[in-house]
Length: 377
Ligand SMILES: Cc1ncc(COP(=O)(O)O)c(C=O)c1O
Ligand SMILES: [Zn+2]
Image 1 (cartoon, protein in one colour):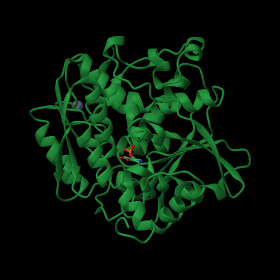
Image 2: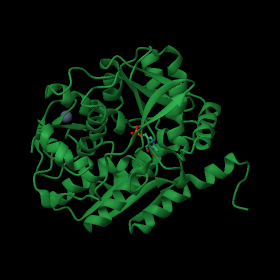
Image 3: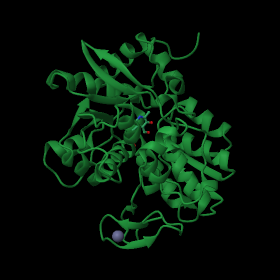
């Protein structure tokens, strides 16, 4: 099922051997040609696996799934303007990371791997732990020690080993890299199979719009697993002749940790070193995104850009969404704050899509802080 290809030196490797990085140290992509049979797709169950021939898993019996995906694309009105929001906080583990985890853990099962490590700000770790539980694969998840308690509980209750690392998100990544020298690295940012799961976001959006491509897609951007996956998915649909263009992709970062924003603003080709400041958007607090250059290229090629949002804007958007009945976590509210900043420059009739990435129930202690309380009571 395709071959792995290095994004830097173009070396190729067979995809049926366990490998997550090029010998030169760079990230790998998967060279794979998807097939879309729209009539067949329409007859299948409403899950992300309805695009079966577009997902690079050879054997059906390797598929690890909870019948996830095909999340509702719901209209939300912001000051008179409608935005279509994908409710990806409704996935089994409570975030869109299940898209990537379902495909990556299927690949891991296909490869016959019995034990993996992964590092995460919490949600990807929870998703990998859930799918490993389903597949009976052992896993150890590395997280920053200040990760939301709800995500930590979830990881442990799924039966994964939890390793809390003091320091920044980057310190956690380094700890997992050391462990990955001995065990397979089920990394959502390094492993290309994760992106062949998150790309189903684009397939679903286009199908739900009547196989039409939206004009603009507004997505949170940390390691870019959703952004790059969506870009790949929109490109695959265009290459297959199902749509004829791709949308402009707007990436949203927290002002306190915005290396991609900074790079694009200053026309840099390398990602600048930023000191990751505190942000309530823990999922996008990524100071050194491993696929940073790819993310910049995707946003640039799509005709989009980045928008940075402040802590006050994230908080206001979170409160606004909750008051409308959408219980999302603070990281997801960063994308909503981005929508609010983008809308004044949108055109009448522009079809804009965004996403609720994670469920509010995962971040109860942060939600309590919004009420002005440090804890229950
Ligand atoms: C709730 C939530 N939203 C958005 C993101 C953004 O991540 P990425 O850019 O890696 O897709 C994350 C990552 O952990 C997350 O947990
Ligand atoms: Zn290489």
